[in-house]
Image (tube, rainbow, N blue to C red; front, side, top):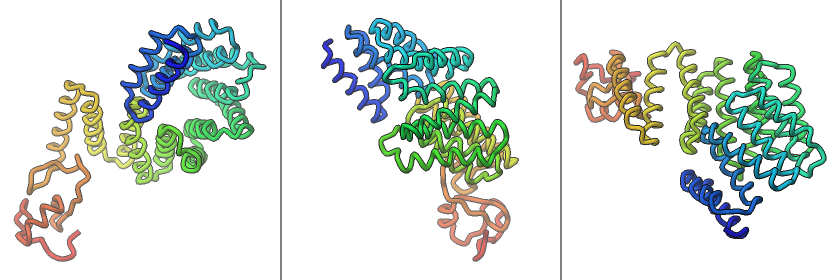
Length: 353
């Protein structure tokens, strides 16, 4: 495969990926990787594969491609390529919670000063190192790295990097229990997405919304937390971002736990898991969560006494009667004034709750 054809196929994969046709994009890139003998083309397509597998949560595959990219960079004998590949290796190990290795690879990157890309990548290296120190609970060094990354972002007017650093700072302040700052920084990230993020991946919006949800929950603003978490989950489902889906599920459970709403939290959990496994075509796991969902519905008596359908699975409008029984609003409207179908009391009157 020639250089021009390699470039065209990589661009074709990028277009597919940006339109959420992830598997097709991966197939295109894998064909390029198999057929091209041109090192620079191989390096670029490996970068695409590393990013895609990172966003899908396939971190072992991400690491595998990062190792191949290192070998390709050495073949090119170009320090710019080598620094970028070491950064991808650091990120891969960060995702796999190999934090000591992450720090080691980041230090290797920072020692490779003088390359033309070092100024562009040093901020990202500092961010990755900060995330690793945070993972090790070495808070002072983590904060130093995040502040350094933020300076690089401001000096280079890199709004995307600034957004990522703000999300990491949100996580940092959550861990040290400064919840006002834990909310401030992801809110700043959300502002950056709104102002500059039209051409960015939706993952940046999802990241900021998730970190806002965590901070709102810690501050006791549960309605705001639920709204942000639902927005983040919607994007995560759309893009097949399974790590973020898992984080959102945990956040949903924490929100319901904060409401002392354990059963509803389980109900929401099973419903969301059902949607995920249905999308993935994993039938056994899907059946398990469907069964557990209906067990929760039966246990909580969460079904409409008129139509018999479950309440809580879909966003249907509900109405409670003075006798405390509640139904789908559309079912009550068709019932007219014949009273409550559960207790047969004539409670259909103006002003009911």
